[in-house]
Each structure stands twice: as C-alpha cells, then as structure tokens.
Image (cartoon, rainbow, N blue to C red):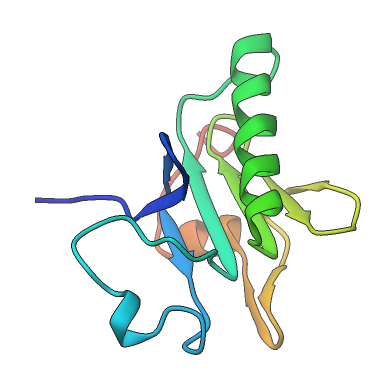
Amino acid sequence: MVSEPGLHIDRRNNLSGDIMIYERNVLTPSKITVKYADVPALIDVEVDVKVDLSRKKDFDYVMRKTQKLLDFGTQKVVWIFTETQKVMVAQVNEPWLTYDWSRDIALLDGVTFNIGQYLADEGVETKTEA
C-alpha cells in the first residue's frame, strides 16, 4: 500500500503531498501520528505526471496549492512536471522559477538533484530522447 503524507492547514483544509521534508525541531515525535501533520514542512516536493499548465484548471491548481503551502509556512515548494520535463521552484519572498529538469536543482544547502541526468544514467528513455 502506498500513501501520500498529509498536511492539516486548518478546519476543512487538508492537502496531501508527495514528499515532505521536515525539520526535526518542527515535526517532533509528539507531532507524528496517523493523522495529517499540523506543522509546515520545510520543503514540499510534488511530482505530477498529468498536469498541463496550458489548461487554466491545472495551472490554477498548481498555483493555489503552492501558495497555500507557502502561506502555511513551507519554505520551498518544488514541482516536477514529467510531461514538460520542467521543475518549478517556489520559495517564500522569492520569484517562482521554472527550470529544465536536466539541470542541477538545489533542494537543501549542499543537496541538489538532477532528474534528467538521473534518468539518463539509469537508462530510462524520456520523450525527447525517444
């Protein structure tokens, strides 16, 4: 069984995430339960295989969810869009930037990831390579 971590922002306002990275002093042992976390993640990583940002509905969803997470206290939201092979990085009080997924993207200080390079190294063909 696979599940996504959940986040309880306020009454009747819950979000699920793909990967949430927490600071230990924020998500303390007493905060870890089977229910949604009620503290913001340091970083939220979202992987979306079907979103089409040219469609208003999809674009609005990504923008709303990102802003909700930042408003709640998440410091960085990273969206990985597989269809367009792009990565969007949104940070508090910074411009939201979009990059090609074949470049190094900073996740934490001293920690980067490069999806395009990783997939190439693993022999995974993507639509631009096929």
